[in-house]
Amino acid sequence: QVQLVESGGGLVQTGGSLRLSCAASGRTFSTYVVAWFRQTPGKEREFVAGISRSGGSTYYAESVKGRFTISRDNAKNTVYLQMNTLKPEDTAVYYCAARATIVVVTSNDRYDYWGQGTQVTVSS
Image (cartoon, rainbow, N blue to C red; front, side, top):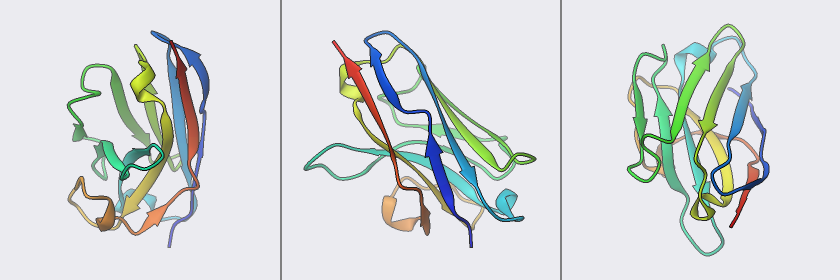
């Protein structure tokens, strides 16, 4: 099993940046693919970015491509989401999720472990 804890959310102005962190427990973190999702009230949790076990492959939603960067440091059991050029529509609760497999998928129901979420608010 793995436990995930997100941090780094907050309030930022349009065009600003934030870096989210997802810290994981457990000694087998490198065997999990990890993804970031986000959710706003009344909407389904949507895929934002995903990263392979080694960090060599990354995947992004079209809405964040070119602005967000996902990375991981397996020695620190941590995955990051660098968010630049933030827009009001990026406002959401951001969750990290992990899946013990080799394939990054975009469906939220395919992930086994979730963090508690961190709020990101982008003011206009």
